[in-house]
Image (cartoon, rainbow, N blue to C red; front, side, top):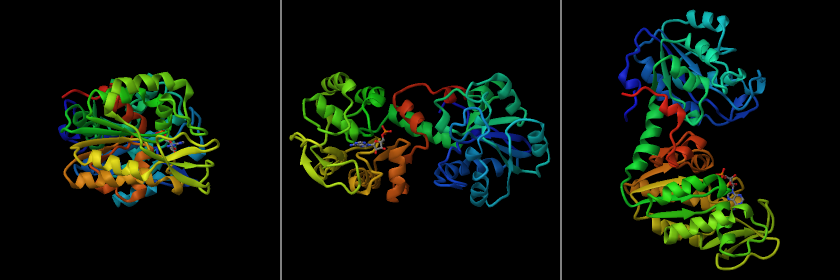
Length: 395
Ligand code: AMP
Protein backbone atom coordinates (compact mmCIF):
# COMPACT_ATOMS: atom_id res chain seq x y z
CA UNK A 1 0.00 0.00 0.00
CA UNK A 2 1.35 3.45 -0.89
CA UNK A 3 -0.33 5.16 2.07
CA UNK A 4 1.15 5.62 5.53
CA UNK A 5 -0.19 3.33 8.24
CA UNK A 6 0.18 2.96 12.00
CA UNK A 7 3.21 0.77 11.26
CA UNK A 8 5.09 3.86 10.03
CA UNK A 9 4.78 5.86 13.27
CA UNK A 10 5.72 5.61 16.89
CA UNK A 11 3.08 6.40 19.50
CA UNK A 12 4.97 6.29 22.79
CA UNK A 13 4.06 9.25 24.99
CA UNK A 14 1.89 10.88 22.30
CA UNK A 15 -1.77 11.89 22.36
CA UNK A 16 -3.34 9.79 19.61
CA UNK A 17 -6.62 10.75 17.97
CA UNK A 18 -8.24 7.71 16.36
CA UNK A 19 -11.29 7.86 14.06
CA UNK A 20 -13.08 4.53 14.37
CA UNK A 21 -16.31 3.27 12.86
CA UNK A 22 -18.61 2.60 15.81
CA UNK A 23 -21.72 3.16 13.72
CA UNK A 24 -23.32 0.06 15.25
CA UNK A 25 -26.97 -1.00 15.29
CA UNK A 26 -28.57 -0.28 18.68
CA UNK A 27 -31.42 -2.06 20.39
CA UNK A 28 -32.60 0.60 22.84
CA UNK A 29 -29.66 1.24 25.18
CA UNK A 30 -27.78 -1.88 24.02
CA UNK A 31 -25.43 -2.60 21.13
CA UNK A 32 -27.30 -5.07 18.90
CA UNK A 33 -24.27 -6.13 16.82
CA UNK A 34 -20.72 -5.41 18.00
CA UNK A 35 -18.92 -6.53 14.81
CA UNK A 36 -17.61 -3.02 14.14
CA UNK A 37 -16.38 -2.61 17.72
CA UNK A 38 -14.46 -5.89 17.53
CA UNK A 39 -13.04 -4.85 14.15
CA UNK A 40 -11.45 -1.75 15.72
CA UNK A 41 -9.73 -3.66 18.55
CA UNK A 42 -6.50 -4.67 16.70
CA UNK A 43 -5.63 -1.05 15.86
CA UNK A 44 -6.47 0.13 19.38
CA UNK A 45 -4.27 -2.59 20.89
CA UNK A 46 -1.48 -1.89 18.41
CA UNK A 47 -1.39 1.75 19.58
CA UNK A 48 -1.79 0.98 23.29
CA UNK A 49 1.09 -1.50 23.24
CA UNK A 50 3.39 1.44 22.53
CA UNK A 51 2.20 3.28 25.67
CA UNK A 52 0.84 6.52 24.20
CA UNK A 53 0.08 9.45 26.54
CA UNK A 54 -3.62 8.90 25.74
CA UNK A 55 -5.90 7.43 23.10
CA UNK A 56 -8.92 9.49 22.06
CA UNK A 57 -11.57 7.68 20.04
CA UNK A 58 -14.20 9.37 17.90
CA UNK A 59 -16.97 8.08 15.66
CA UNK A 60 -20.38 8.95 14.31
CA UNK A 61 -23.51 6.89 14.91
CA UNK A 62 -26.58 7.07 12.68
CA UNK A 63 -27.89 10.30 11.22
CA UNK A 64 -28.66 12.80 13.99
CA UNK A 65 -28.40 15.64 11.43
CA UNK A 66 -26.35 17.99 13.60
CA UNK A 67 -28.59 17.70 16.67
CA UNK A 68 -27.89 16.10 20.04
CA UNK A 69 -30.09 12.98 19.82
CA UNK A 70 -30.01 10.82 22.98
CA UNK A 71 -31.07 7.63 21.11
CA UNK A 72 -27.95 7.98 18.95
CA UNK A 73 -25.48 8.46 21.80
CA UNK A 74 -22.26 6.43 21.63
CA UNK A 75 -22.43 5.88 25.41
CA UNK A 76 -23.55 2.20 25.07
CA UNK A 77 -20.41 1.46 23.04
CA UNK A 78 -17.93 2.37 25.82
CA UNK A 79 -18.67 -0.62 28.12
CA UNK A 80 -18.63 -3.06 25.17
CA UNK A 81 -15.25 -1.77 24.07
CA UNK A 82 -13.98 -1.84 27.67
CA UNK A 83 -14.94 -5.53 27.83
CA UNK A 84 -12.97 -6.39 24.66
CA UNK A 85 -9.94 -4.36 25.73
CA UNK A 86 -10.16 -5.41 29.35
CA UNK A 87 -9.47 -1.77 30.27
CA UNK A 88 -11.39 1.26 31.51
CA UNK A 89 -12.85 3.34 28.70
CA UNK A 90 -13.94 6.84 29.75
CA UNK A 91 -16.83 8.50 27.92
CA UNK A 92 -17.14 12.23 27.18
CA UNK A 93 -20.64 13.49 26.51
CA UNK A 94 -19.46 15.74 23.68
CA UNK A 95 -16.68 15.54 21.10
CA UNK A 96 -15.36 19.14 21.24
CA UNK A 97 -15.08 21.94 23.78
CA UNK A 98 -13.16 22.77 26.92
CA UNK A 99 -14.98 20.21 29.06
CA UNK A 100 -13.81 17.42 26.74
CA UNK A 101 -10.30 18.85 26.58
CA UNK A 102 -10.15 18.86 30.40
CA UNK A 103 -11.25 15.22 30.52
CA UNK A 104 -8.56 14.28 28.00
CA UNK A 105 -5.89 16.15 30.00
CA UNK A 106 -6.97 14.35 33.16
CA UNK A 107 -6.67 10.85 31.65
CA UNK A 108 -4.14 8.53 33.30
CA UNK A 109 -1.09 7.49 31.26
CA UNK A 110 -2.28 5.47 28.22
CA UNK A 111 -5.90 6.16 29.21
CA UNK A 112 -8.63 5.58 26.63
CA UNK A 113 -11.59 7.89 26.11
CA UNK A 114 -14.51 7.65 23.68
CA UNK A 115 -16.03 10.95 22.57
CA UNK A 116 -19.73 11.47 21.90
CA UNK A 117 -21.20 11.16 18.37
CA UNK A 118 -19.41 13.58 16.02
CA UNK A 119 -22.62 14.04 14.02
CA UNK A 120 -24.27 15.80 16.96
CA UNK A 121 -22.47 18.80 15.40
CA UNK A 122 -23.51 19.92 11.93
CA UNK A 123 -19.87 20.77 11.16
CA UNK A 124 -19.12 17.04 10.88
CA UNK A 125 -21.01 16.23 7.68
CA UNK A 126 -20.35 19.74 6.29
CA UNK A 127 -16.63 19.07 6.69
CA UNK A 128 -16.44 22.42 8.49
CA UNK A 129 -12.88 23.61 8.94
CA UNK A 130 -13.41 25.14 12.40
CA UNK A 131 -15.04 21.98 13.69
CA UNK A 132 -12.15 19.89 12.32
CA UNK A 133 -9.70 22.23 14.08
CA UNK A 134 -11.55 21.77 17.38
CA UNK A 135 -11.24 17.99 16.98
CA UNK A 136 -7.58 18.34 16.02
CA UNK A 137 -6.81 19.99 19.37
CA UNK A 138 -7.32 16.63 21.08
CA UNK A 139 -4.33 14.84 19.58
CA UNK A 140 -0.84 15.07 18.15
CA UNK A 141 -1.21 12.13 15.76
CA UNK A 142 -4.29 11.27 13.72
CA UNK A 143 -5.11 7.69 12.77
CA UNK A 144 -8.09 6.95 10.55
CA UNK A 145 -9.51 3.43 10.87
CA UNK A 146 -13.12 4.18 9.87
CA UNK A 147 -13.66 2.33 6.61
CA UNK A 148 -17.47 2.65 6.79
CA UNK A 149 -17.20 6.43 6.25
CA UNK A 150 -14.27 6.41 3.83
CA UNK A 151 -16.63 7.31 0.96
CA UNK A 152 -17.66 10.54 2.75
CA UNK A 153 -15.65 13.77 3.04
CA UNK A 154 -16.49 14.69 6.62
CA UNK A 155 -14.62 16.70 9.27
CA UNK A 156 -13.54 13.72 11.39
CA UNK A 157 -11.83 11.99 8.47
CA UNK A 158 -11.06 14.33 5.55
CA UNK A 159 -11.23 17.64 7.46
CA UNK A 160 -8.82 16.43 10.13
CA UNK A 161 -6.34 15.19 7.57
CA UNK A 162 -6.09 18.74 6.21
CA UNK A 163 -4.91 19.89 9.66
CA UNK A 164 -2.86 16.85 10.72
CA UNK A 165 -1.05 14.02 8.96
CA UNK A 166 -3.49 11.12 8.63
CA UNK A 167 -2.34 7.52 8.66
CA UNK A 168 -4.38 4.34 8.17
CA UNK A 169 -5.24 1.98 11.00
CA UNK A 170 -4.93 -1.78 10.58
CA UNK A 171 -8.59 -2.22 9.62
CA UNK A 172 -8.41 0.41 6.91
CA UNK A 173 -5.21 -1.18 5.65
CA UNK A 174 -6.90 -4.61 5.47
CA UNK A 175 -9.98 -3.23 3.70
CA UNK A 176 -7.78 -1.53 1.08
CA UNK A 177 -5.67 -4.68 0.66
CA UNK A 178 -8.70 -6.83 -0.11
CA UNK A 179 -11.18 -4.50 -1.79
CA UNK A 180 -8.70 -2.56 -3.84
CA UNK A 181 -5.34 -4.33 -4.22
CA UNK A 182 -6.71 -7.90 -4.52
CA UNK A 183 -9.45 -6.85 -6.89
CA UNK A 184 -7.06 -4.87 -9.08
CA UNK A 185 -4.64 -7.82 -9.23
CA UNK A 186 -6.77 -10.91 -8.57
CA UNK A 187 -5.65 -14.48 -8.76
CA UNK A 188 -7.64 -15.86 -11.70
CA UNK A 189 -10.22 -17.19 -12.31
CA UNK A 190 -11.89 -14.20 -10.64
CA UNK A 191 -15.67 -14.37 -10.20
CA UNK A 192 -18.28 -12.14 -8.60
CA UNK A 193 -21.71 -12.70 -7.11
CA UNK A 194 -24.12 -9.78 -6.98
CA UNK A 195 -27.53 -9.62 -5.37
CA UNK A 196 -29.68 -7.24 -3.39
CA UNK A 197 -32.87 -5.44 -4.20
CA UNK A 198 -32.10 -3.34 -7.23
CA UNK A 199 -30.05 -3.11 -10.41
CA UNK A 200 -30.10 0.70 -10.35
CA UNK A 201 -27.84 1.10 -7.30
CA UNK A 202 -25.32 -1.37 -8.68
CA UNK A 203 -24.93 -0.42 -12.35
CA UNK A 204 -21.46 1.02 -11.80
CA UNK A 205 -20.26 -2.02 -9.86
CA UNK A 206 -21.68 -4.40 -12.49
CA UNK A 207 -19.89 -2.49 -15.24
CA UNK A 208 -16.62 -2.29 -13.31
CA UNK A 209 -16.67 -6.00 -12.43
CA UNK A 210 -17.68 -7.16 -15.91
CA UNK A 211 -14.37 -5.83 -17.18
CA UNK A 212 -12.46 -7.93 -14.68
CA UNK A 213 -14.29 -11.18 -13.94
CA UNK A 214 -14.68 -14.48 -15.76
CA UNK A 215 -18.26 -14.81 -14.51
CA UNK A 216 -20.79 -12.59 -12.77
CA UNK A 217 -23.47 -14.58 -10.94
CA UNK A 218 -26.66 -12.67 -10.22
CA UNK A 219 -29.37 -13.26 -7.62
CA UNK A 220 -31.77 -11.34 -5.39
CA UNK A 221 -34.39 -8.86 -6.51
CA UNK A 222 -31.91 -7.60 -9.07
CA UNK A 223 -32.34 -10.82 -11.09
CA UNK A 224 -36.06 -10.03 -11.50
CA UNK A 225 -35.30 -6.83 -13.37
CA UNK A 226 -32.95 -8.73 -15.71
CA UNK A 227 -35.64 -11.38 -16.32
CA UNK A 228 -38.27 -8.70 -17.00
CA UNK A 229 -35.82 -7.08 -19.44
CA UNK A 230 -35.73 -10.41 -21.30
CA UNK A 231 -39.53 -10.34 -21.56
CA UNK A 232 -40.43 -12.77 -18.78
CA UNK A 233 -43.60 -11.99 -16.80
CA UNK A 234 -42.44 -11.53 -13.19
CA UNK A 235 -45.99 -10.94 -11.84
CA UNK A 236 -45.78 -9.28 -8.40
CA UNK A 237 -41.99 -9.57 -8.03
CA UNK A 238 -39.89 -6.51 -7.25
CA UNK A 239 -39.01 -5.24 -10.74
CA UNK A 240 -37.50 -1.84 -11.55
CA UNK A 241 -39.37 -0.98 -14.72
CA UNK A 242 -37.45 2.28 -15.12
CA UNK A 243 -34.20 0.27 -15.25
CA UNK A 244 -35.25 -2.20 -17.98
CA UNK A 245 -33.25 -0.46 -20.72
CA UNK A 246 -30.17 -0.35 -18.51
CA UNK A 247 -30.64 -4.05 -17.71
CA UNK A 248 -30.91 -4.88 -21.43
CA UNK A 249 -27.74 -2.91 -22.10
CA UNK A 250 -25.85 -4.73 -19.35
CA UNK A 251 -27.06 -8.13 -20.61
CA UNK A 252 -25.90 -7.31 -24.13
CA UNK A 253 -22.53 -6.08 -22.90
CA UNK A 254 -21.99 -9.05 -20.58
CA UNK A 255 -22.77 -11.80 -23.10
CA UNK A 256 -22.43 -15.19 -21.46
CA UNK A 257 -20.36 -13.78 -18.57
CA UNK A 258 -23.53 -12.84 -16.70
CA UNK A 259 -25.40 -15.79 -15.20
CA UNK A 260 -29.00 -15.53 -14.04
CA UNK A 261 -30.76 -17.99 -11.71
CA UNK A 262 -32.15 -21.12 -13.37
CA UNK A 263 -34.84 -21.56 -10.73
CA UNK A 264 -36.40 -19.37 -8.06
CA UNK A 265 -38.46 -19.69 -4.91
CA UNK A 266 -41.74 -17.91 -5.56
CA UNK A 267 -44.38 -16.99 -2.97
CA UNK A 268 -47.98 -15.82 -3.01
CA UNK A 269 -47.20 -12.95 -0.60
CA UNK A 270 -44.24 -11.00 0.83
CA UNK A 271 -44.51 -12.91 4.08
CA UNK A 272 -42.49 -15.61 5.82
CA UNK A 273 -45.71 -17.66 6.20
CA UNK A 274 -46.73 -17.29 2.55
CA UNK A 275 -47.27 -20.38 0.39
CA UNK A 276 -44.09 -20.87 -1.63
CA UNK A 277 -42.63 -23.23 -4.22
CA UNK A 278 -39.80 -23.57 -6.72
CA UNK A 279 -40.34 -22.34 -10.29
CA UNK A 280 -38.10 -22.96 -13.29
CA UNK A 281 -36.65 -19.69 -14.56
CA UNK A 282 -37.95 -20.36 -18.07
CA UNK A 283 -41.57 -20.03 -16.90
CA UNK A 284 -43.61 -16.87 -16.33
CA UNK A 285 -44.78 -16.32 -12.75
CA UNK A 286 -48.45 -16.97 -12.01
CA UNK A 287 -50.42 -13.79 -11.41
CA UNK A 288 -50.22 -12.63 -7.76
CA UNK A 289 -46.91 -14.45 -7.10
CA UNK A 290 -43.44 -13.03 -6.55
CA UNK A 291 -39.89 -14.34 -6.59
CA UNK A 292 -38.18 -14.04 -3.19
CA UNK A 293 -35.09 -16.27 -3.42
CA UNK A 294 -32.93 -18.27 -5.80
CA UNK A 295 -33.78 -21.99 -5.98
CA UNK A 296 -31.73 -25.14 -5.18
CA UNK A 297 -30.76 -25.80 -8.81
CA UNK A 298 -29.29 -22.29 -8.99
CA UNK A 299 -27.31 -22.86 -5.79
CA UNK A 300 -25.97 -26.07 -7.37
CA UNK A 301 -25.09 -24.30 -10.62
CA UNK A 302 -23.37 -21.42 -8.81
CA UNK A 303 -21.44 -23.90 -6.62
CA UNK A 304 -20.12 -25.62 -9.77
CA UNK A 305 -19.19 -22.31 -11.41
CA UNK A 306 -17.40 -21.06 -8.32
CA UNK A 307 -15.57 -24.33 -7.67
CA UNK A 308 -12.83 -23.27 -10.09
CA UNK A 309 -12.48 -19.70 -8.83
CA UNK A 310 -9.34 -18.44 -7.12
CA UNK A 311 -10.80 -15.05 -6.15
CA UNK A 312 -14.48 -14.47 -5.34
CA UNK A 313 -16.20 -11.24 -4.38
CA UNK A 314 -19.81 -11.17 -3.17
CA UNK A 315 -22.13 -8.23 -2.59
CA UNK A 316 -25.87 -8.37 -1.88
CA UNK A 317 -28.21 -11.13 -0.65
CA UNK A 318 -29.68 -13.72 -3.03
CA UNK A 319 -33.18 -13.31 -1.60
CA UNK A 320 -35.19 -11.84 1.24
CA UNK A 321 -32.92 -13.57 3.76
CA UNK A 322 -34.45 -11.61 6.65
CA UNK A 323 -37.33 -14.12 6.38
CA UNK A 324 -36.18 -17.70 7.13
CA UNK A 325 -38.39 -19.12 4.33
CA UNK A 326 -36.33 -17.16 1.77
CA UNK A 327 -32.85 -17.32 3.30
CA UNK A 328 -31.60 -20.61 1.78
CA UNK A 329 -30.09 -18.99 -1.33
CA UNK A 330 -28.11 -16.39 0.64
CA UNK A 331 -26.94 -18.88 3.26
CA UNK A 332 -26.09 -21.35 0.48
CA UNK A 333 -23.76 -18.81 -1.14
CA UNK A 334 -22.11 -18.18 2.25
CA UNK A 335 -21.43 -21.93 2.50
CA UNK A 336 -19.99 -22.08 -1.01
CA UNK A 337 -17.63 -19.21 -0.17
CA UNK A 338 -16.53 -20.91 3.06
CA UNK A 339 -15.80 -24.12 1.07
CA UNK A 340 -13.86 -22.21 -1.56
CA UNK A 341 -11.80 -20.46 1.13
CA UNK A 342 -10.89 -23.90 2.47
CA UNK A 343 -9.90 -24.85 -1.11
CA UNK A 344 -7.43 -21.97 -1.22
CA UNK A 345 -9.49 -19.22 -2.85
CA UNK A 346 -9.52 -15.62 -1.60
CA UNK A 347 -13.11 -14.79 -0.70
CA UNK A 348 -14.32 -11.26 -0.08
CA UNK A 349 -17.76 -10.21 1.13
CA UNK A 350 -18.82 -6.58 0.69
CA UNK A 351 -20.35 -4.99 3.77
CA UNK A 352 -24.00 -4.43 4.59
CA UNK A 353 -26.61 -7.18 4.19
CA UNK A 354 -24.37 -9.93 2.78
CA UNK A 355 -21.92 -9.38 5.66
CA UNK A 356 -24.79 -9.60 8.17
CA UNK A 357 -26.00 -12.82 6.47
CA UNK A 358 -22.55 -14.43 6.71
CA UNK A 359 -22.38 -13.48 10.41
CA UNK A 360 -25.75 -15.21 10.90
CA UNK A 361 -24.52 -18.44 9.34
CA UNK A 362 -21.60 -18.61 11.78
CA UNK A 363 -19.21 -18.95 8.82
CA UNK A 364 -17.64 -15.50 9.15
CA UNK A 365 -14.26 -16.84 10.27
CA UNK A 366 -14.14 -19.07 7.19
CA UNK A 367 -14.20 -16.13 4.74
CA UNK A 368 -10.94 -14.35 3.81
CA UNK A 369 -12.36 -10.87 4.35
CA UNK A 370 -15.74 -9.45 5.31
CA UNK A 371 -15.84 -5.72 4.81
CA UNK A 372 -17.13 -3.48 7.59
CA UNK A 373 -18.35 -0.86 5.13
CA UNK A 374 -21.42 -1.22 2.90
CA UNK A 375 -21.44 1.93 0.77
CA UNK A 376 -17.66 2.32 1.00
CA UNK A 377 -16.97 -1.25 -0.16
CA UNK A 378 -19.35 -0.84 -3.10
CA UNK A 379 -17.62 2.37 -4.18
CA UNK A 380 -14.19 0.73 -3.94
CA UNK A 381 -15.45 -2.17 -6.06
CA UNK A 382 -16.69 0.40 -8.57
CA UNK A 383 -13.10 1.57 -8.81
CA UNK A 384 -13.88 5.00 -7.33
CA UNK A 385 -11.44 7.06 -5.29
CA UNK A 386 -12.77 7.35 -1.74
CA UNK A 387 -12.11 10.77 -0.14
CA UNK A 388 -11.26 9.26 3.26
CA UNK A 389 -8.57 7.09 1.66
CA UNK A 390 -7.25 9.77 -0.70
CA UNK A 391 -6.72 12.03 2.36
CA UNK A 392 -4.28 9.59 3.99
CA UNK A 393 -0.64 10.64 3.86
CA UNK A 394 1.38 9.09 1.04
CA UNK A 395 4.29 6.97 2.00
P1 AMP B 1 -29.35 -4.05 -1.33
O1 AMP B 1 -29.34 -3.00 -0.24
O2 AMP B 1 -29.62 -3.51 -2.69
O3 AMP B 1 -28.13 -4.95 -1.28
O4 AMP B 1 -30.62 -4.96 -1.02
C1 AMP B 1 -30.74 -5.74 0.12
C2 AMP B 1 -32.19 -6.12 0.30
O5 AMP B 1 -32.65 -6.78 -0.86
C3 AMP B 1 -32.44 -7.07 1.45
O6 AMP B 1 -33.17 -6.40 2.46
C4 AMP B 1 -33.27 -8.18 0.81
O7 AMP B 1 -34.38 -8.56 1.59
C5 AMP B 1 -33.73 -7.56 -0.48
N1 AMP B 1 -34.02 -8.57 -1.50
C6 AMP B 1 -33.22 -9.56 -1.93
N2 AMP B 1 -33.84 -10.33 -2.83
C7 AMP B 1 -35.08 -9.83 -2.98
C8 AMP B 1 -36.22 -10.20 -3.78
N3 AMP B 1 -36.17 -11.27 -4.58
N4 AMP B 1 -37.34 -9.47 -3.66
C9 AMP B 1 -37.38 -8.40 -2.83
N5 AMP B 1 -36.34 -7.99 -2.06
C10 AMP B 1 -35.21 -8.69 -2.14
